[in-house]
Amino acid sequence: MKAKIIDGVRIGREIQEEVRSEVETLKLQGIQPGLAAVLVGNNPASQVYVRNKIRACQALGLYSREIRLPAETTTEQLLTVIDSLNHDRAIDGVLVQLPLPRQIDESAILLAVSPQKDVDGLHPMNAGNLALGRSALTPCTPTGVVAILRREGITLEGSRVAIVGRSNLVGKPQLFLLLREHATVTICHSRTRQLPQVCREADILVAAIGRPALITAEFVKPGAVVIDVGINKVAGAALKDILAADPSLVAQYEKNRAGNKEYVLAGDVNFSSVAAVASAITPVPGGVGPLTIAMLMKNTVQAARMQRNLQGER
Ligand code: NDP
Image (cartoon, rainbow, N blue to C red; front, side, top):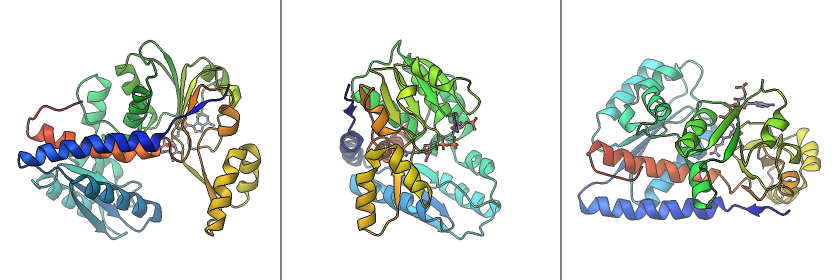
């Protein structure tokens, strides 16, 4: 079998176009949804993520504000900033870029963001409402995974799904989002026994592990759909092994090297191995990644609607 390669870039663009037209409609009613992105410190990857989020807002007509704070910011200082954003009428969504510097109490910060403005879906109120099957702002990446599956016409109702990974950011919300779609869900983690066998039971396998190329054909039922959430930067001594294990990464490596970048971005799935048995697979990059920003934009518009008691799509 040769798997269909799911085009996350195209799906992400489609959703962004829908958001753009929704923003235009809201503007006719005098509403411009607004997003504030708070970045603490100088983590280069976080800087890129925040810049991309602000750019997406600008491209879709949302108001945006980037708030940069020094690396030595205290929990109290960050709480003050969040409080003022919670009360700012120009701001419908507040996102705090993670990870935060060590001295900051991350749970206290996530708890301080108003649940109505929690466009990352990480406030316990939103997490709880999702678990209870109530309306909630839901985390962008697992919500994007569901969007991919739906838009690819993959049957969720009654299907068996295995998720590898149980983080609060991806695995756990993914479980509840898929239950909401009436899938039969198994969630696996580092203590799961006989992981390949458990995964091989699934019609749909979602990998959110943070271990490059861990999932091989041995984990996949022939004809299953495989969604790779992982984004792992592999450099140095590990490069040789990963390129040998997954030759599909060689082209990316050659391209990166031509630009003086000595690394590859690998998923959690060994693409070369799994594409031979799956019926469809998301690539890395260009699979789940583009959906994360699209869903953040969608959540911001949803937050703007909810705060004004306007009806909107879930
Ligand atoms: P975490 O490190 O928070 O969680 C990883 C999970 O994988 C844990 O539940 C862990 O189990 C499990 N795990 C680790 N090793 C194994 C193993 N050998 N076998 C089985 N399970 C294992 O990661 P995140 O959920 O935050 O992220 C997962 C991946 O997704 C990363 O590569 C990350 O970069 C990527 N990501 C991509 C995004 C995107 O936009 N596409 C957004 C967010 C994340 P245990 O709980 O037992 O420790």
